[in-house]
Amino acid sequence: MPHRMLFESEAYDYPLGQKLLSFAKEHKIPHRTIPAHNRVTGLPGASAQQKYSQAKKTIVVGLKKDLRFQSCRPSADYQFPLMTSCPGHCEYCYLQTTLGQRPYLRVYVNIEEILEQASKYVEKNSPSITTFEVASSGDPLSIEHLTGSLGQTISFFGQLPLGRLRFVTKFTYVDPLLSLDHQGHCRFRFSLNSNRVVEHFEHHTASIEERIEASVKVAKAGYPLGFIIAPIMLYPGWFEEYGQMIEKLKKGLEEVKTFSVPISFELIQHRFTTKAKKVILERFPDSQLDLEESQRKLKFGKYGVSKYVYKKEEAQLIEEKLSELILKAFPTATIEYFT
Ligand code: SF4
Image 1: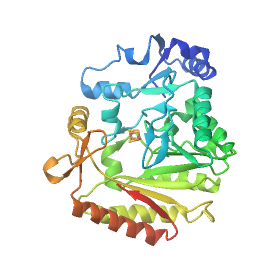
Image 2: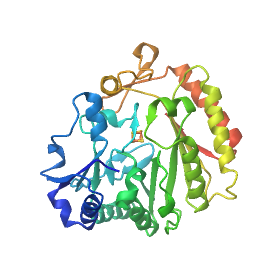
Image 3: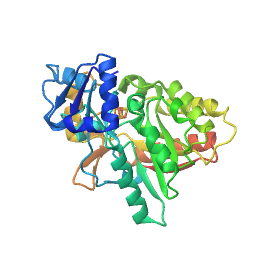
Image 4: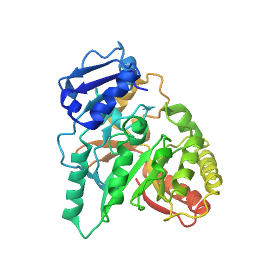
């Protein structure tokens, strides 16, 4: 439940804008009109921690004006802009830097225009299949109970023979999506991690048990299912704890008799940038995240952004050991990549 909702004036011209305005009125959520999302002022909070926490309780309702979809390798062909940010407080979140001083949630109400644009990309790429990642700038399931936009998008892609959708989530509001005519065109992925990582770093998100329970529901509804294990962290006992999580997953999924397609896994090791470290330590001064540069290897990125990743031998160890655990528990699964 948001603590405040800010509306760009053009948002009132769209059905979703009106729906969200009625929601704010009905639930007596403070709301007001703002000139533009990047001119949000007056959010409460004195310290960086308070500002972050209050921003994560704020929803800005507006339009997605730039409809040029960005590339999204290695997960998909393009990013799909449905919303931005999420109410979670994961300490390591990549959005700490990409959203910088604007971590509030943004909801885009011109959904019809966004969907039409997606179908143009699909058409242009025909006869190849075009894949879109909905979770590249936030967690779309985290506010689905307010917008219904993800459900609308899944139904739309159900009618696109060459369009595919995928997203990853740490939330569990899946029930209204189970009966949609998805045609197997949307892959649901749940983010998983070891107990220690979830407990220490993934604040305000669903528990691993709840995520596994939701994954069983979507698998039973015939959706292609996947898991992203990220960020994978090395610490004393890491292998045992990741093993326990995979076992828990195996046990949870036992009640699913058949899967529409093999389960996929994506493996991402923990990484951080110098900029991220600064922002994280402002927002979480007591963070126990391992952000020690001297213990890592600097990896030069595509866009001139260098990241600290695990040293080569450690990264190899993570890849080998986790792949082993996964394939032992799920022999027909595919491991799409390790990065
Ligand atoms: S749930 Fe995902 S998007 Fe939200 S804070 Fe955590 S890592 Fe970031």
